[in-house]
Length: 269
Length: 231
Image (tube, rainbow over all chains, first blue to last red; front, side, top):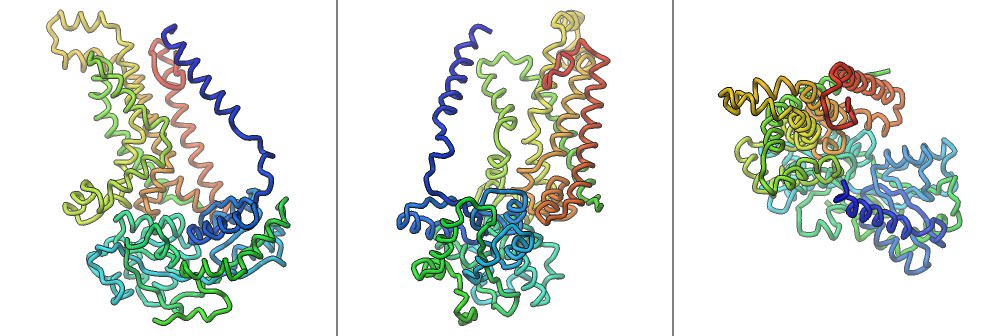
């Protein structure tokens, strides 16, 4: 036992050193916490870092499935602003008195794409939905329609083309749209329904080919943001939401493949 | 109150397969850990214990990459069977075996090492081969530790979440286990459904552990890891 004592004391010293070095909570002077749909992971990071440089207000981002984040907010998660991938979840929060109805803003319209890795044999760019019936396709990844709006859109698009029943036994569900992308990117699923924002994100550049699912195939992915009622930083939260409406921020959203609400969401096919 | 019985039965099937495999594979491994005199043995012991401390996301992440068509292993398996190991029951079995390995092997090894060495010497003096000594002396004296190991591997697999979430793909009847089903219900704000499933799992796991502790009550001399069982 005596031989182990120095190691034990060493470990205790390390733990104590870590505990002491944790900054006190009030140290962050101006900071807001943002919950955001997984399809925003790249675009909102860029917008937040531009905003931090401009105003000095730190923006902490948490990404997840919109349904999962709504669930967390309903259970008291300390977020100041919520960027959903649809309008229903923010409205649900407003109806429950958890978000300020006056702040609800449709910041973007999302686009669904069918994505395959670059070296795939599937000619998704020309064949579109037809690749799903290729015998090479063993698994198709989509977001979980139960709590991911993009998953719901994917299921709707499959039904629109009369393919849902033919491929339903090959669907695998990602917890959110980012995990759906991860399943196909890692080569476990052969094709996946992901957000256009993922397909165009820097981390995915050159890794895949995609086909934009025509917007008449699924209910429009109107994405809404809202300020959380409980937020102790409402002025800063509102200011960040206002910044997202500026041309500087909307340009970033557009670059990642989001359509702006003012525009016609139809894109040339 | 809707209980996802399909998920429940699937999880029990998974836990049964995993604990059976770990029983068969864990015995020789635990035997080697107990009786080997190799100087680097502690490295193997640390490796076996890793899943206790690693977050399941580490294992889940490496499995997802290993199963995928970008890894040689995944490519080999896909050329053999035509599909990936991710999103399959077999894939979950492999992940769970790795994830629950220490929960079987450590109690096995602890009970082997508590067998009186004089009995082993006596058995050997009387002309028994090491194999026959193992089956006729070591194993019968280690029964409580074996039960503990198998039961813990079983219960630990029942409660597995992170690895299944990362490589399962949430397919009903194939990879949607109880823990995933509960998670889905909570995310969908269906608290009643989540509660029914969670309560069922809680009672089930309590019963499994109660049986293990109950067995140990009757054999107080058996030294066994973990949870301070009957020390």
